[in-house]
Length: 244
Ligand SMILES: NC(=O)c1ccc[n+]([C@@H]2O[C@H](COP(=O)([O-])OP(=O)(O)OC[C@H]3O[C@@H](n4cnc5c(N)ncnc54)[C@H](OP(=O)(O)O)[C@@H]3O)[C@@H](O)[C@H]2O)c1
Image (cartoon, rainbow, N blue to C red; front, side):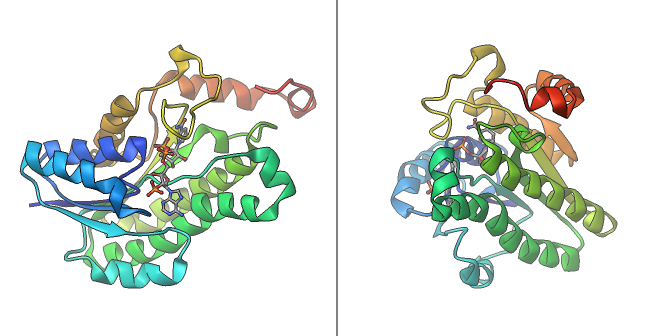
């Protein structure tokens, strides 16, 4: 039986990712910063799909505990999904460095810390799949969200290099270049329905992309074209654009 580790399975997308693996008969290792928030997810998955689920309290910013967390797992998983992220108040992050640091820490530094460890184990074993959710916000810095975007840009570049490093060892690294999705994180944002995915739809596509060992994936295909056009705008025009 195959095993998937979903880090931040309590996220609105992560819980659907866990369900997509459960449907496929995977055993699950699920994490959250708060075990309480996994209770309903676990009882639903075990009742509905009869799969084995283990729960772990895990904070991506507690780097010194990442090694012992990995060693505490009953098995090295076949596939790992990074579904954690942090994007709250950019205005606060620009005046309060602890908020900026948290944004970098959850979205980038924490990801590097855990993925370095997992990558080394997968490399030794000669197989494994890593899926990490990055963001279209990391493709070009915009005044609305460039702090979060720059952390995701770092993540996307890290994943690209990791993919290159692990290719010869039969380890795949799938980067999800996600546009807006209806979740807690985007609540209160002015989202255009046609450009916004539902979490269950995004989750299923994320799992399929990882299982088919895709490299970089846009979840709604037109985001590839939107970002292509955004990247073509010359900087002297881009810097004058109103917030979008
Ligand atoms: N929603 C969007 O529009 C959108 C767009 C592009 C990319 N994304 C990315 O999609 C992924 C999933 O986010 P979501 O939209 O499902 O939002 P969400 O429901 O708010 O989930 C974010 C998750 O991040 C976890 N997290 C935050 N701080 C953490 C920490 N210190 N340690 C471990 N986990 C931590 C939280 O876990 P706990 O519940 O356990 O605290 C939370 O479940 C994230 O990578 C996000 O950046 C989202």
